Image (cartoon, rainbow, N blue to C red; front, side, top):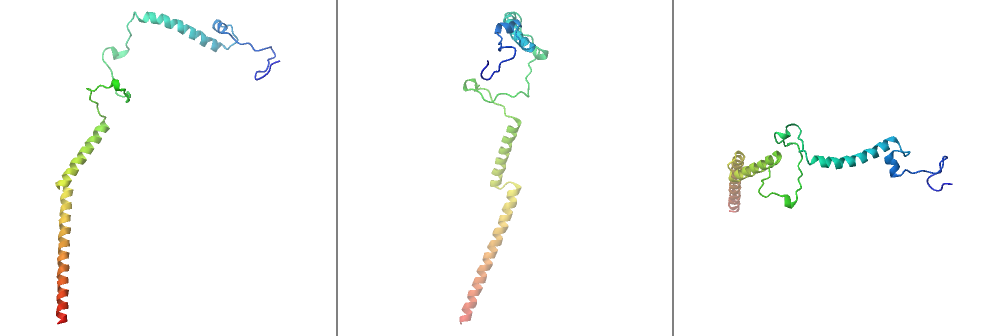
Length: 160
């Protein structure tokens, strides 16, 4: 009587296939399993034969690869490189976005330098506004001084 997880079958106890039976195809396994095992065995034997044959024949190239070298522009290249693989003489090519970003930063720096020197249109307008404001403040300060002087003069005249 069976104990544990596997219950006894009405036909008797469970029978397991041996590797020899599986290769021979006489096991009670499904046919697809037998085909897969047979394919694996055939592949192992054919690999040994193909290695011997491949030494004699040069590798065949498909399409235009034999005539011209084709480099796929869409191929993603690995970005991480080991230190021993780095070529110091090779200059790295920047992507379009990186180039545009660098150009944008340089243009901004040039503009800010000209802005500080007062050579841009915006800087000229700002300086004109600033000069106008300074003039208005100077006029207002002068007017306050005159009013203050006039008040003091009235006080002095009022005391007499």
